[in-house]
Length: 329
Image (cartoon, rainbow, N blue to C red; front, side, top):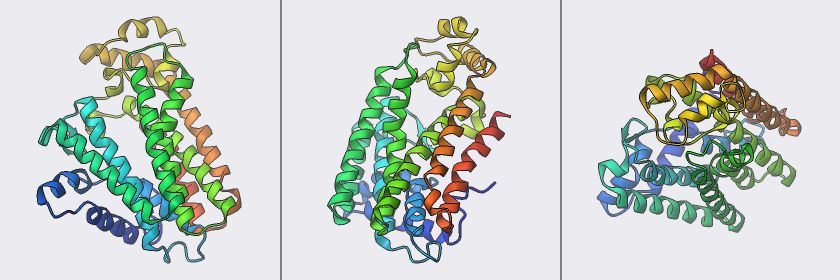
């Protein structure tokens, strides 16, 4: 089933514009630097965040988004650059070999290059945001801070089976939901929407982002290696004990599962831990939590429900549940 966030009228036009502006933003006089900074951008990606910005701006237009300005696109590009820059840094932390089907920057070049290239992307994002106005610049800077806070909170609990649900939610709020909320808010601000609509769309973005991460955490357990591009249960190997694991630890499977956690595990031990989580009901419990956030996201659109953009946003939130339910069987 096509993702409504990527298949609405004129979506292909907006996607092409986003990709063009993304590449233009990282093109420099130094071909070597351009190659490094555009590496993951050229590798692809769904561009969900900038497309959400476009859709949020379109809720204020009668034509469903055909009048979207380049400033709206650039607002989404700024958020996407923050996301890609964070991936460069994440791959250094995780010692990742690949990303989006290509060699990670740290492997193709080295860790220092990946860190500096990621910093360059954050700088370009800030430059674009500054051009869009003080409010957007402040918002993006605050979001980068929230992203760092979320990542640090996650690292603090690495390999700790006593991670609390509050700590989990705090981490995903910072590292994932804040970017989605900011993408929506920038789209609404730059699109010139009334302040109540800006606030409503920001709330939508946060709830969508929370649901998105919950779904992603389930997919890490129930999808195949071919679908994920990495072994299923990779988060368990990395010591990132997400909500399905935390919920499983509270069940009869908790003692055995806890005995497997606390250190890096692979192969049969990782597969056993994964099987325990799935059999415990942790997956279903997490999907129910994702559904709660999807309902929150759709409720935020109540005053915008008549617009084409709002319909696509609501359908996009529902798509998260359709996708994860199908994967979980």
